[in-house]
Image (cartoon, rainbow, N blue to C red; front, top):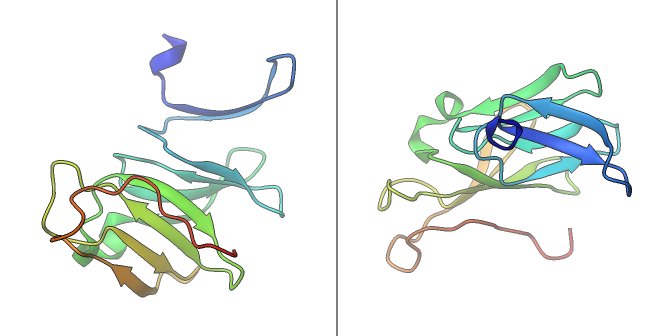
Length: 131
């Protein structure tokens, strides 16, 4: 079934699909970058990918790149002005351990982590104001 295949699609105003990338699970966010590539949060696949117009993965950050974050469900992504990415991590079912959100460089270095398990059980979307 097309509605269950795990896809990110760009459609024109008439509803015609003009670009798609399939094979992602529980995608919560997809954003077209200035370079024409698309940044995709791959939900329960525990990764963020950047995909070129032809469907090639040109960059990827996955849970094994930073095991201490306890990436459970990549729920949101935001490119920042400094070139880094702000990533939301939905910890549903994995509460109490790991980051709710983090900032990562393109060379996969985590530079900032937000985790407050006393105040936040599960976070779905995080955005930096003014970015």
